[in-house]
Image (cartoon, rainbow, N blue to C red; front, side, top):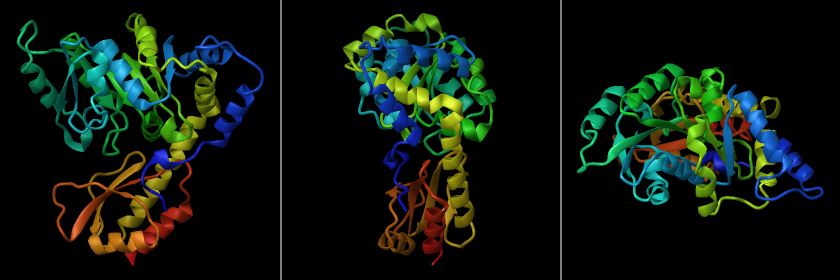
Length: 345
């Protein structure tokens, strides 16, 4: 009953097989290999758009490199106040960009509220040398509280950004989970809605260590290759990262893995609603649940081997606490049902 994180899961067998295949023989280094070339062509098909792809090994690198590409040192990145880039990247976006400022914006369910975005932008007038200049809007998909942005919501926020000549970045660490929940095409959920560049995540959903910066706006990719090298993320044996991503998207594997993860979250949520004392703080739309339970129940769960992270939220007290539960492609119905059984007493 390990619900600590989808990072705790292993590697999908299909991706392990792909790694074994590229381990035979030799290949050109630093991304000049056939696998990386195929990956770009295959991703262009999946997203229905000619694009550039820059494989890296961490989501932090993908986010920081993407935001630094879009944002000058005197610029601002508008993000949700709970966004990973704001709360959990240890200043990497600021460092990679040479000092750009992250400006947090509120909104329910960790989704940026359009009116609040407009209000924050109004505080940063264009051309005023005394304030940072808005350069980038970043959206997390799925959100830090397990919700999703619809294509229409993305487009509406992108339109606000465009009015200030800003670019739009998407942190897609759990993009597959959002896509499986929305049941729309990758194109509809990204560039067709106004996204210029995205961090495409695979590690949380079956890869060993594989992320990528995907650039839909070709003009933005000019110096990204140099930024990646300077940041230490141009791997000499790039084929081992590209092979993971290629296997990930082959025959819709990424969406099948994410759909299973989402289904396990839905099963968990349905079971937890059935007994008094459990409170779901937000309606789960992807693979995360934020749940308030009595402290005695949490102790009983831990005593029975359940693992999860505490997640302090307003409204918690000595008697009840909030925890985060995350499912993965490896989560089984038996694990879910046992958690529900133990929680219900």
